[in-house]
Every structure is written in structure tokens, then in C-alpha cells.
Image (cartoon, rainbow, N blue to C red; front, side, top):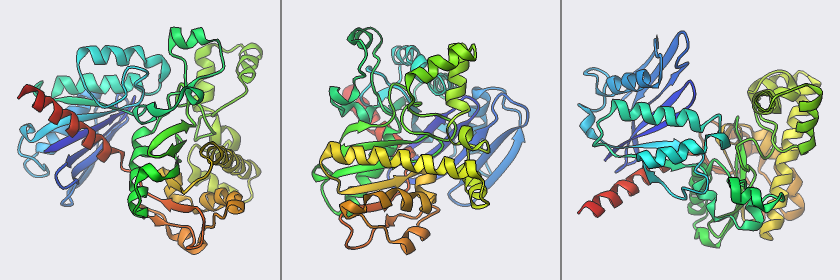
Length: 407
């Protein structure tokens, strides 16, 4: 069974064609700058075919047509025709209270997803654009499935997901903590349990998805009991361009004194804050690392703030679970910034956590393994995330259920 996994953004479209039997990636790539001048199409196959071309991708439908043509091309394709694609799995960011598991896409499901756009305005609208374009390009007989980032976090208890505002707003609007990056947290927590050769239902684990967008989850006995992102992916600690949690009065103060509309405020907090806002340099941590090494004070401050905020979340979750067996680092920063991992974990030596610096420094660029010493009382891992494989597996389960229902 070949499953096409799609992750659509407002001007991008990432894709992977996965043979789910052996979990191999037949082809993958990205469509960049959709709707803009000089769009870029990237394509790479398992057997080494690779292309990067500048082209005209006026919308997501044009991007899907480009993907379809590349996959079936006589010279560069990996399948003869689209009949070899059994299903399509879409990454969906916000499932609200509607969706707690992967779901077959129907008109009703899409309508519910559209009602959630205000909760993830940077993501859900773009994802729905991608879904509708995909429906238009691929045969309707191919089942399409939405896999929700929020689903893995649906095990949180009310004491963790409720906000201390008037209860009527929860009842009226569903305002609560939902959490995000669920497929990533699920992926690396399951992998960590395997590496430890222990049942995940016996473990207390903290998973740190650290990238341009970041979140941390406390996973006890295989279930999320708390996570850093909240109603939207803006909550938590500082990220590439997002502020993370703030005193709510900061928002009203800025709106009053800068005469900002809600939309303008949202733009500042989502796109002009975080590492970019503090450093004044970039959203990319690599750029800030270079500047910090040269003594740039704001770059150094940005890193100090990031490490400090992450440390506080991990410490809080250790307390919430009354202990911790393992800490996992994943995603762009988590997998490739040894200094962040070292500085974060140095605050937990009082609990017996010890990083092996020589191993930690080498654990980058897709490498997987334990970076703690043999006598560390908390196991510390770097585990590359594979959200696409999780999406493909969930899509397969939905398709199998669908076939069993029909039979």
C-alpha cells in the first residue's frame, strides 16, 4: 500500500510517498512559494533521482498537478499511474473538540475544520486549501484522511486543559488547551520506549519538539497529561517568531498604546516576536548562534531566554508527574543544537541527570541515540521525528476500517 502524505502551508506543500509495508520513502519533496513569483518545485526519489526547478505554481492545485506529474513521469517517476496510490493522508493542525483520532475526510469533516480556522489561523486555512485542491486533482475513489496534531493531547485531564477564565467561554467557544505537534510527540515517545526496551505505559517521559515552532509534552504511562501549547500554537515558550506565553496585559497594553487591531497584534506575536524579536537577527537559530559566538548581546540574550523557558517547563512537568524516566529532544533545534541540550539538562543535575558531552556533541544531522551518561538517573535521548510515517500509519488504519465496514 502506497500512501501519499501531504503537509500544506499557505505558500508551501510538502509531500512524501510512503510504501507502508516496508516504511520506505519512494519519493519526497516540497513546493515552495506557491502563489508567488518564481515558485520552486523540489523532488527526490529513493533511487536517487532529484530535481529542483523554478516554475509557475499559481495555487495549491497547480502544485498538486506538479507532484502528480513528477510521481508518474516516465523518466523520474516512482509509480506508473495514480492507481498505485491507495490513500492520501493530510497533516491537520487543529481538531478542536471534534476530532480525537485520524478521520476520513468528508464534506462535514471539512466544514468542521473550517469552523476551527480562528483557533489556528496560520495553519488550518492553508491545510483546507490543500485538501480541496487535492480532492480536485486526485480521483474521488482515493480515500483521503486528516491526521490531527491535537489528537494525541486529548488525554489531558480538565485540570490541565482548562483556562482559569469564566467557564461559560469554554462552553460557548471551546476555549481550552489543545496542544500541538501531537504526531511528533507520539512518534518519539513510542520510539524512546523501544530504545529503553520498556513498556511505554510504565514510563514518565518529557518530549521536547524544538524547532521554529516548539512544544513540550509530559507523557505519563503513554498518555499526555500536559503540554505547553494551548488554544493555539502561539502559547508556551518563545519560538522562532512566536512570543509564547505572555502576561495578557501585555496584549491589551500594546493594543491601547500602539493603536493595534487584533489582527495587527496577532501579526506581532506570531511573526515578529520570539528569537527574531529579541535578537533582531533572524527566526533561524543557526543565524543567532553565529551572532552569539561573535558576542552579539541580543543574540546571547535570546538563547539564554529560550533555554531558561524550556527548563522551567521541563521542571514543572517533572513535578507534575512526580518524577521522570526520560527526556527526549527532537525537531530542528532539538536534533541539531547540542549546546541547548547541554544547557537545558544542566539544571537537572540535582535529580541525577548527566549528559555525556562527547556523545551529545556528535548527535546531530539525523542521528539517534542516548546522550546521557550510563549512571545518569534520567535517560536523555535525541530522536529524529518522523511525523509523515505516523500520518501514513494512521491513514492506513482508517482505510482498513473503511474496507472492513464495506465488507
